[in-house]
Image (cartoon, rainbow, N blue to C red; front, side, top):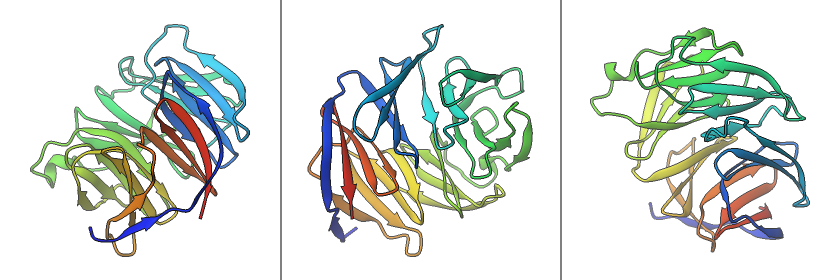
Length: 250
């Protein structure tokens, strides 16, 4: 990696976020943050908190997918469940993953066609399911084409690829039918996101980009140490130094 670019950022606001672990946004200018491990705060484009959600069992939230604000996915890995919430954060449905036959789900994500991607580490397989958790598509086991042990912690998707993110091995890429394409070998990835045809990822509190037409890694100069990030439309939401900032970028 030789190329480094500077992302031109314009700060809109910064607010304190001392107990925030992760952030997830959507194209409707709303941010969903995980606070105190089991709470969700919804924040608007002005930095104001619109609503809050707390799981009654106080289970640790592993991830949120809010790209469809009418059907928000809240994943509890330890509880092996997915809560599906409406835009008022009322529970529409609960999926018990063990009851559906998935023994060790470690990552989930919303698919572009509004289904749900699930990765089951017990079978090392990627599944697409409906909102009841019933499989409608599955990949072959990654054991059949990889000699390495993968520890998947995130699923990402754009209009060409599904990515399985591993902090040791890198990113394993599949086509939209679950067929293996290739892998990006990069250790230390803590988070990744597709935005159109660019794969962004954070490593050692820094941000990188990989355009899918070249697959060359580009360093991005940002002065803040990154805890978590999310690109949406022309905005970059950034969690850093126990603070949450919103930027426009170009």
